[in-house]
Length: 456
Image 1: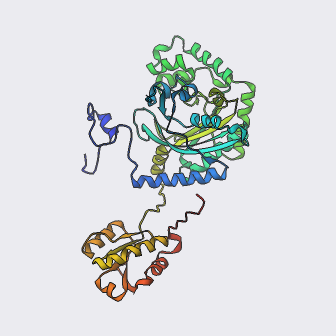
Image 2: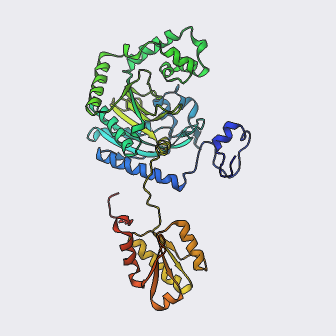
Image 3: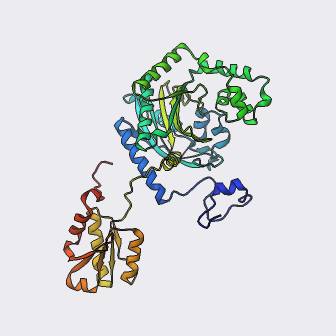
């Protein structure tokens, strides 16, 4: 292994070298630190998401990091992988069962009911950017704590809304520079009655074929037969090709609804593939389901998806309320952006480093740095390094375009030196002209102003 290669927790787990030990003072398995270079991606994604959602009338919501466990058992489905294997569940001191959020839709619907939002003009539109938690086997782009963006449109059903939700998701992918590598797959899984009939047909089809199924698929067949269509097992994939088709079991109304959604997608010039085996992993979906995926990747190729969940609010005790939503994992999106070599703009690069020699110079530097920052210039300096040469080395490491130098002579004469670090030239200016000169050199477009009264 090269000197600059560091084994991650995932690598250690896969090659067995981490077996039976938990190295101290490191992250727990399946979670990771978000370091400053990656935070630039997160910030960029959040900016684009916020802009696109505002354009479409969505407003931000944040629900608590944990909910009563029953919220997820009742909605996601007790037979689902999330509830049966992946939830972080614990009891509080009063013996109440609580769960760290594994997904965002059910909590938003709980909030919709709890706060009487059915009385608001419908549909109600929310978006969120939050961390979620699932006890899964860590893989590239999949962690036990992960960030997800999602939006939910609650209170209306219309094929045109389904198409608009898909359009909004695609516009976000376009803004992020990854839309050309993603394909949209879509399906209609009908209403609850149709799914029950189809589930029985799948059980009948697989009767006598159980020996070809993995243990996981055998459980799926008994508890949630539709999930077998989403199996990654090769034998099951082959068997699924001859299985009864979902489209033969959904109602005429569902077929008509689906055709109308596809019509709007064609009007919007959104390319799609119909996938009869697409069911999504959560029990609350009905009618339209869709995913954006990278067909060149194996395994974890879904970069985001969603669908209609018209029965979920009723499951939580509310009145029957139609709804549709979408979600995407930020870690997977960032991985896709890196594969596409998408460079995100950074607002963290410093403009100016202020170097000084002597206590009197430092006394001048501290207010100068504050004045520079108030004008939108990102500046640092007045450090404890005694030699100007050492301070200039730090400036080089930060790759600042300009450096201000103030020594004993400059203090005495009321002047400062401005050095252009890119070309190595420098000029001496009056101390009270330093800020104006740097504003002119850096340019207004590059300044980073902050006004607390600006809209957030």
